[in-house]
Image 1 (tube, helix red, strand yellow):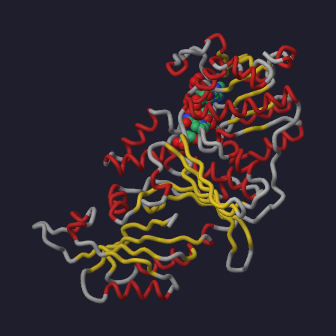
Image 2: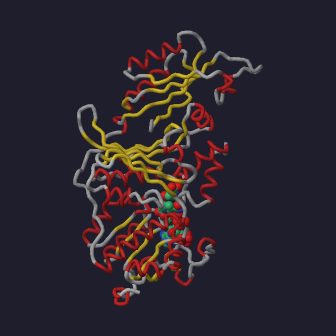
Image 3: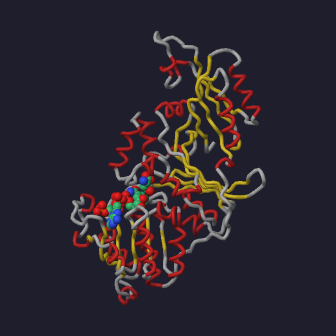
Length: 454
Ligand code: NDP
Ligand code: HSE
């Protein structure tokens, strides 16, 4: 035990929440107390754990001292030096964190939904009170990504962030592709494994990834980006056929969060942030991100390309990130100093997703007769969209083609086209699809997916 540790009394730690993440935070705080004390320079004393129902059975928290459980979160916050919020939701989490900050406590939170909705209120309160607010666990679970973007890259200029930041959707898409599991079964498994949010709609509709994208974009571009600034599309419309077609064309489908510096047609410089499913070529490193793992690519002017990879969800991985923040905040209590404050000096405009440059892969069912492909190609040319590849798989080889076989198994005169474009503005690509859809020989636009990472 070092000299400073002998002199320094314990730091009182309040834990708000004892679910998937909170129970692991409590376990690590207890089991690693000696090491944590040495790293901090003072013991960390867990003084209470706020929950909704203190009498409920807690199979995840068998190692937790039940006498620490309390339903009085406000009272707990009032007697802490450091408050860890892992309860989730907007209220009462926001009010409790503000109360803690105003009382002079440092706060650590994993709550991306709250930060994306109202982070600036919390950051301002922390600045005013002169206390730390840390939130590494709010983005990509165990992966250190907030600190690298906020601190390590503070001397560089980030151009683009491209990431798989939601473990649940990556797990679901991976299970659909590798085992043929249904969407619903895969979501249920992700819930059982503790990856999904309390309401998994937040995962599958892309809200969780959008919240994380907003947080990362704010840090990377020194600009306030909130949830409603993020163009969002989830994975609920991805079908087994989409997954099979992706494989046939050398891709996997991933839910991507993309935050990039863009310049629109008028030359205005700004930030575009979007979350959507995308086809990623199998050779791209993001295509190999399996299960509930996350990965984030960062492209910066001087650093070039960086990739961060690891477990993006689950109790222990997320608790690891929480504890790292607790140690940072606790060290400041012991040694003095303070973590970084919100940086929004650039205040760049948020440009609409239509300004982003991307590529499309469009699948369509058309009349199988001469001249149809030429008509489709003519529309693309008229919109200034260049074609990278056109595939016309044989009817038998086309995933989902059973739907277009006649009752006798013979052809019904339908051909499937898969058109991949070169890069173009999202607005031009969307207008092209609209124009193709109304061509007389086009029976159906079966799917439109963006292609990223090529
Ligand atoms: P859980 O639903 O498993 O746990 C939430 C805990 O908070 C429960 O113990 C619950 O009490 C308690 N709680 C909720 N509301 C209240 C309230 N009003 N008053 C007192 N206690 C309350 O959530 P997770 O552990 O999965 O997630 C917690 C946070 O961490 C969320 O913000 C989530 O987005 C974030 N996160 C989660 C990850 C994961 O993999 N699960 C990964 C990264 C971040 P009770 O047990 O009595 O119901
Ligand atoms: N529900 C989130 C996910 C938890 O699946 O990634 C981690 O933030």
